[in-house]
Length: 390
Image 1: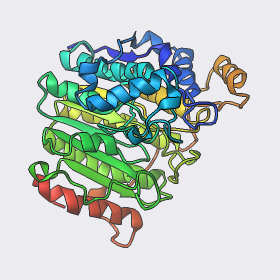
Image 2: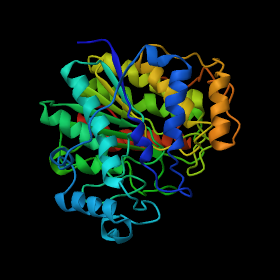
Image 3: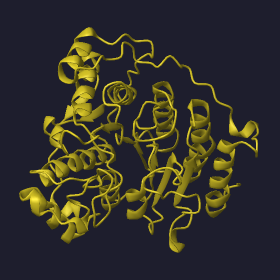
């Protein structure tokens, strides 16, 4: 197996553009790509532009009638069928929507193929992670579910155990739905509690269909959860599950919208904690999946201050060249940020909270603490179904 990492990138993915008033501004993708180059990471990772996902690949997850509805809306946005979640406030139709959505999906599918076949040990598609799209509908800014498609392709290639870990602030509902009845796929989602955030799913009691009980694990975190609690919760649930499941490939989704500055959610996580969890996912892939790691982007709407730095850290970790938090960001990138957005860019690759301390779960817990209550609820609901102690 090659030790080289791949970064999936085609400039055309920035055409995934719902319009100037939509929070999912594609400038976040372009600025991430430029920051990767500004820090010299492109010299340590193979940049690959994959083909768009074809209809047969899209049908691994999505219904044929939905794919046809996306194509129709792509050709005639004014005629988008809202019954398929298209032409809505969250998912406005735009010309070329099918083509660019299929292109993003193609990058994630190709990443999975490269890792499975041994062409790369790690592969990153930060334009991906569109985890809300359902088999028959767009949802939550997501048209095609590239994460689910990547997993489905791994299964098609012969994988018997694929783990999906989602640390976006929103529940990974579309991926969970795609594999609800499939015990070959373990989906783990850490997210803000459904009482306070879209899509109002991801309760601890959601554990999979009767023939796949324990294949879905949900950790619903209280609003306001900050660095130490977020990292503690991750380590209290994810490593033990992966040690038991022993996936052949680890697929992770790294939405940056857990950040305290994100305008669409209510957690209080720093860039440094996001980097810590990215690094932990890398280490878990090596510990339990022979290093096979597919890392995706996701949400994130602080498009200057947070997203480019967070996903550049992700690329750097995958490339085996982690960027020190105190690293000064090149002035050339900061100038480009101002030219594109008229916003002042951050000066360093840190929020000043590194390293992130946390209390190990095995050292004890406080049943009166809201964060610990969330962890307990998840462990009690899901762990016994997998033969693990709650």
